[in-house]
Image (cartoon, rainbow, N blue to C red; front, side):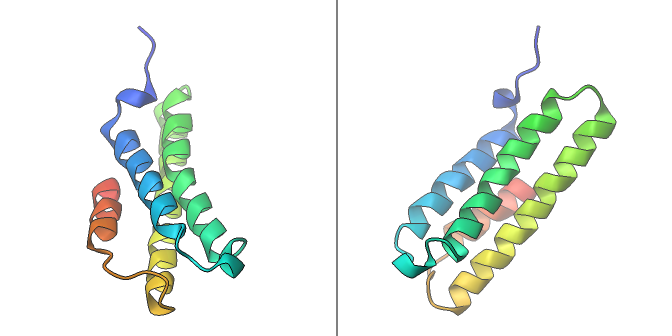
Length: 105
């Protein structure tokens, strides 16, 4: 039977995080569309995409490589969330922070 990344809890959690990021960035200023909004979305999408790609590869070394990329994107996302809070684009981020922690866990 073929392995399927859709069965991975980490992938499912990461996809949910992407949904949340898209939902919260809708309220960001229009002039940030190609700035922090785009960066947040790209970093978020990178996490489940790299989990899926690593899982599809032919060995644990490649899987670990892509999981490392996913972890880096998650750290980038966490930093961008913090910056968004500091400049006043995000508030009440408890659920979002919990999701980031859950995916990184």
